[in-house]
Length: 385
Image (cartoon, rainbow, N blue to C red; front, side, top):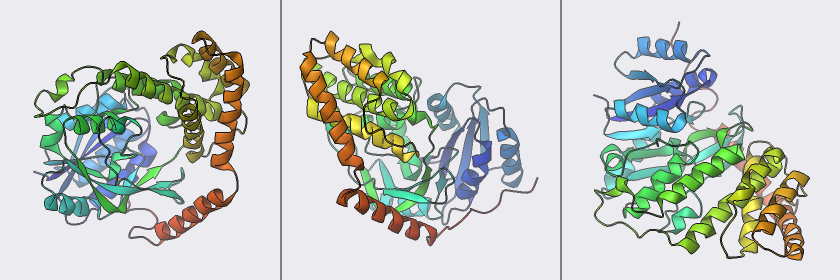
């Protein structure tokens, strides 16, 4: 039986799946199996899986989940997994050859940790240029874990399967978009931790049409996660000590920040979607600085996928935000001042000043390291047909 199970949900990504599976079976010093959840793909996903099953008949498992969504498909893959450790790998991402071995060695030195998290190469859609190194070494407490997901990509995380099951498993039965964050929240609420690994051991493609850049479903997934934090989570019934639930003020603090992030994302990627979020605004606190920062962060997230940042608030987004603030009895002049603040926050983030050129230099240096790393170019070819 394999020691490590790699869970790979796949929908219409058969053209990437060869690379993902090749990176699994190129791992050094570890015994792995791949569990592919084909989520109703109509492309060549099934043919790719069959080729790998012929090459590794005891190491490639598959389940057809029929289009239930990435979050549920990943959960179905976990149901089949036989390993003592899990890696969750999206079909368009890749592992570096030493990922599993390195993380397992770190976990052996930290027996109390639930998982080991390495850094990640964020790459362009072709996977050939590094945008930046996503560092995953900070593990926040409660409720700070709700500020931002501490694990931006789970491909470089090795999870103890027994611990994952004890806090409700990986993946969700609900809407996709925040299942990794939901899992991190459960670990924090249960008093568990992840240990950082100081090396980039996976590759994370940034595509403009990825699910995380669709503002409405991404926001709804975050709100669903937040709602679960307002009550006792039955998935944590086996935990020894669980953090308290969120109070009403904290709930609206986080919810509104997620909303303005979504509006920033919409401004860059889908302005017409902004109106669908008007009714989501609420609470009594007026956190103008935090909202402007969250909006700028949403614009930047779209930018990682190659979507250029809008320097002004698009009219569709301006109308949606204005209406939401009006319904919350915010003075019109305060709303106008806020739009100036929002555009300044975006400008500061993308202005070609010292910080901009520092980010560009960091990206250039990351690309040089990326190209001369342990696995330049493509991983081993897929098995012959």
